[in-house]
Structures are given as C-alpha cells and as structure tokens.
Image (cartoon, rainbow, N blue to C red; front, side, top):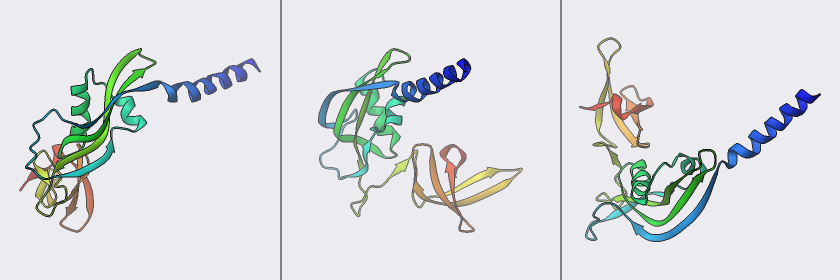
Length: 173
C-alpha cells in the first residue's frame, strides 16, 4: 500500500512540477528590433507571426543577452531579417536555477516582386532544382516546393512525391 502511495505521489509530482519548470517575466515590448541594418527603402513581408512565443520555444531558450535572443528567434524563420511587435522576456528555469532571455514577435523578411515573402534559407528557395544521394543508393533530383524551417524543406521528386529533406543532404543543380 505504501509503495502505491509513493508511486502516486511521484506521478503527481512529475505531472505538476515538470510542466511548470519555467517561469516567464516580461521585460518589455518594442515595436521593432533587429541586430542587422534594415533599409526603409526595401520592401519587407511577414514571414511568421508570433514566433518564439510557445512554451516549447521558451523552454529551449538559452540566450544570455537580448542580442542572442533576437538572433535565435529571427534565424529560426528562414529568410528572417527583423522582428516587429516584439516582447522581451526573462525565462527562469527552476530546475537549473538559471535565467535566460527570450524574444517573441512577428518575423519579417525580404518581399518578392509580387509583394509576398520570399523565403530562402542557406541559398535555397522554392523552385530551386536540387540533387541528393550517393554512389551506393544512387543520386536523385527534385524541385524545392517550400521552405519548412531552419533544418528542412519540402522537395517534389521527379516521380511527383513530396518528401522532406535536410539542407545538409541536398545541393543545387
């Protein structure tokens, strides 16, 4: 009976303590923030709204200063240049006892000729012809359909299938 009570207490502790292992305090709000030079003559478009604000993203934050936090949020969105309507947060990790900065907001990047956001990452953008594979399994090719995130993109193969590929695994034709 005591073992069941201890097990139940452990489950309750894990269920209620671990999900709340961070506390977030808002430091301030800014209309626009960037670590890069932004030209007012250039057209920018919204790439991602409210980026960096989910609990999972806040938990992952390890930025020791605001500059690192801005870079972390902007670089997570392919083609990101700056943040608008941003909130700067101080995230306290209760388990480690350390505090980090996190920034959340709307990520903007360069607009294409039709006024929409042209998302590109590591030199890849939608419409690029790419190759992947090796001598053993054979080389394959396809066309990038969309930029998914900072690690992968969606590629349409020659036979019409859409697959997810890592940027490290592909090269331009």
